[in-house]
Length: 147
Image (cartoon, rainbow, N blue to C red; front, side, top):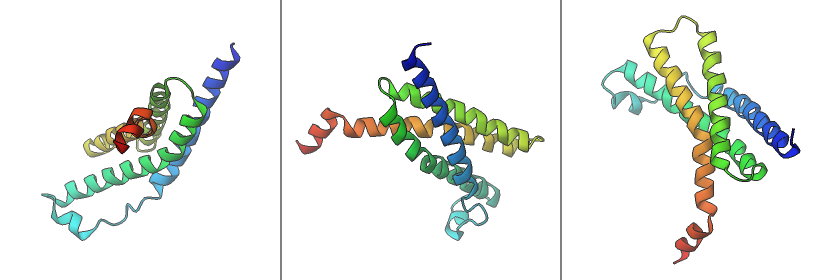
């Protein structure tokens, strides 16, 4: 096997493992035990408010966990970084959603929606940050900001 290709595979595998661990820790530590009073008042029912609050916390936790992973990805991967970020995101989201489904095996309708939401936010957080960093540091974007 080509050493460059082996390095790429090992870097992606390490980033997937790191993102899976970080996201599991961060999302698990989010304050799921309370919802703010103002949040409960803006939704039609308490059940909708609680599920949406959990969804927002999942998204925030996934983005926080994706920050160091996307910085490492931008530093270690050359070429099509967004494709590599999608590879990391897809693999980590399949692993995380699979572990949630296995842990909570009798899934109800609401837990299926929450698992789908977790899948999407974990899938899209790394590619979004890598794309955003690329757009932020691109030469054209830098010049446009000063014109």
